[in-house]
Image 1 (cartoon, one colour):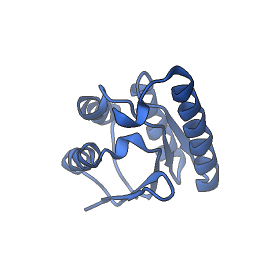
Image 2 (spheres, one colour):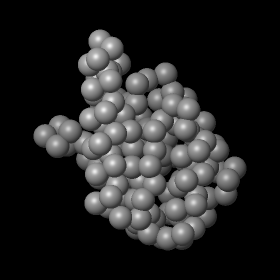
Image 3 (cartoon, helix red, strand yellow):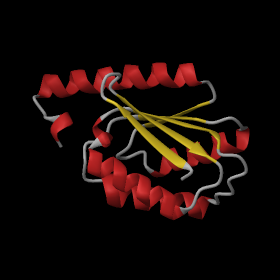
Amino acid sequence: MPIRLEVSEYEGVVRTTVSGPFQVSDVRHHLQRITHSRAYRLPCLVDARAVGDAKMSPRDLLSLAHLAHEALGSLAVAPCAIVVDSERHFARARMFAAFVAGWLPIGVFRDPDEAETWLMVRARRLAGAVRATGQRWLES
């Protein structure tokens, strides 16, 4: 499967690796695993540097955004950082981030260390805001 999911409760992060071309069915299966395992509660670091020559049109990205919203849109989802290796993938990942911006905080990066730093800062801020309001973010 081109999308690998590793949930590290110890680190408090979900690490997803995307390698090679992927299909909508791969994304659907991945979203089912995230929902079933409740991994959406943890910050997610997506390493998409090995995607290769994925040909995703803006329409394909919008379809993926709708698919993600169907699976996760009603849940309190932790932030997600996506690491890419080319300008084309950077532009496509930013477009996807724009499509889900209202409900899923996504940062797009070329450097994995910058992505991880951004992710942890966002996760700490969110956890602090949740504690301050008394919400139950990790129990949604």
